[in-house]
Image (cartoon, rainbow, N blue to C red):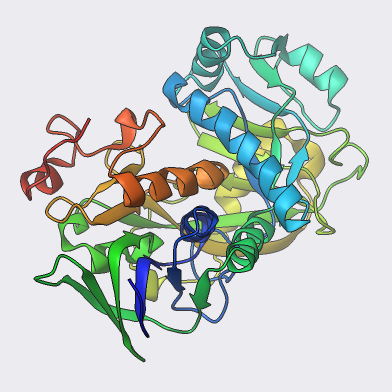
Length: 400
């Protein structure tokens, strides 16, 4: 394709996954346009702002994520070399729970994935965790899986690195340009209309985060957007909660739920903690309440006071963001149900950022060839996938 406003591929939404897709498409030498509704790709309106997201090789959610994680690590390292930006920070990762009283069995399933994929790991009891990592205070009978390659991805830096490197490889990026609609032309090309112009392309990649149901009506009622709040709490011993001494963590508690958190990082004081699905508050992306309430702080403190008492100081900061959840909490990555020239990526359900480097590669594969070198069977639209029946029945034909 050639000419003003014509591209090989257009990417709508250039946050974590869109910026990565833009990068990988540009590296293939394609003429690619990224469209972002906000003034910068790294903004505070979506699901990826701030400086820290957990990355880990063991995966209690499902062992089939592990091969994608191996590739994600490789691609994060490649991006650091290509962009000159430091994105990945290794701290180790702890996943722990009470083996006798557990809901999601974080420890047990993490161990299964580590054993199945022969990952470096250690199994520790509560006393061993407390002795080795003084910021923790676990009961003696608790079990924890320690994986030394876990750590932190600097989320906003990762988005900026992908976007800037994409442009260095020839991509065009338009910020402050909201997409109003897209349609498939009789020629098979896709026309994308924004507030400012109409562009055409052979392929379209939709990575609009919490706004995906606006882009793909078949996702309405499938993708559920939730309000999420993260807090930073003053610690009593800064050394104990430093990146050198305090691994990132995930734990489940049968009464409190599942929590995750980080050491002090990137110059921000305070241990960072969140509860998966927080208060289970549904929202719309343009109606998200960013006001922090007593209930927000209370539920975070409950997790801190039980297992991390040295971080139960003043709440120094709290921010609201969004999870976009699929019914089974797996990702949605596939071709559009009726338009094979359109690739959709949605509903990473609060655990997708760490994968964005490899998701970008997957989306580029799908846009270029209609398939991918990676096993994404968990994340494709299929007849038997819980909650995605409407999307499947909209006309999807599986391409294996």
